[in-house]
Length: 154
Image (cartoon, rainbow, N blue to C red; front, side, top):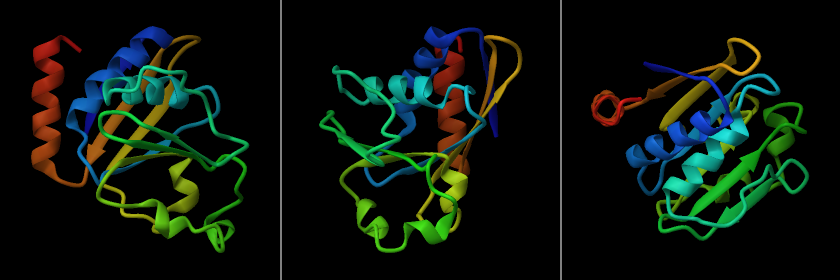
């Protein structure tokens, strides 16, 4: 697991942009952390890093927002769901394909219901500081990400 500390929203977005270099088509990323821990800020950086230049917000009310980036992105927000059973009948399984990256906020609410290739855990350390831990299912990808972060001074 790789852990990073950011001191403000802009650093969180910048870290997301760096993390995007480790993502590939078909990846499903679970983001877990309490309200205010920086999930949406990190996703803004991830989506920017994947080539989308428009506005990136939280899809809390629509559940899924798609971004036509260089590597297409689906941003899912499960905040309003109670748990995995709430996914039934929503076409949940159809979201995941080999042509895009799927970023799932509140991913713990769908644990075991999607092909998670990366887990990101966010914790609020202080008023503005965030501890962000990244764990890939594939240890080699985690080693490669560690090199990217070390080379860029993260």
